[in-house]
Image 1 (cartoon, one colour):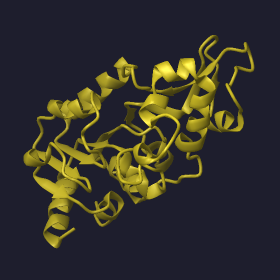
Image 2 (cartoon, one colour):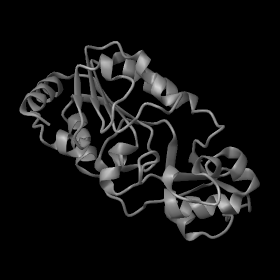
Image 3 (cartoon, one colour):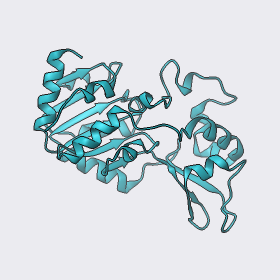
Image 4 (cartoon, rainbow, N blue to C red):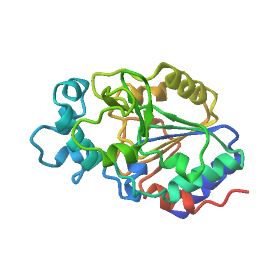
Length: 243
C-alpha cells in the first residue's frame, strides 16, 4: 500500500460514521483458513467429488457420511484465530466508525475478535441443529463425532447451520445486511472476488459516498471504487490508527 493509499484510507475511516465491511474468504486466509478459488484453494484440490458437489444440499442428504468426511476435514478449522483484519474491524466498531460486518465466511472469527453486529450470509460452522427436535450442537461436537452425527436427545440427523448450494439465504440475515448497506456512508469490500451470487449482488444497495475495494485480484466493482488496495487486508487495516 502506498503512502497516498494509506492516507486516503485513514481519512475515510476516521470520518466514517456508519461504515460496513463486506467480506469474503480472503479475510480469513491470513488466519490459515483456505479459500475456495485461488490456486491453492479447495476448488483446485483433488477429491472424489468436486467441492461444490459435496457442499450441496442434494449431496448432504444422499451421501451424508461422505459429506461429513469432507466437512470435518476441510471446513472445521477450529484452531484458527482472528487475524489483524478481524481485530481492526472490531476496534472500528467499538470506536463508532463501523456499523456492521456482512460476511460470506462461516468461521465465526469476526465474533471471536469482538465484533458484535455481524450478518453471516452463509451461516456458521458453530451452529448445528437436529433436524427433528432442533437441539443445537457446537462445532467441536461435530468434529469429535463420527460418520453421520445423530442427536443425543432424539436420534435425528444433525445438520450444520451453513447455506449449502441449492439452499437460499436466511431472510432475516438478508434484511439486516441490506439495511446496513443502504445506510452506510462507507462500504469496504474485502477478500472477495464478487463472483458468488446472490451475495455479490448486495453491493447494488450501496448509495453512500466511499467505496473501497481491498482484494488481491480485480473485481467487477473496481470501476466504481474510490480506493483499491491489493495488499493483505490485515496489513492494510492494521496500519490505520483511528481515534
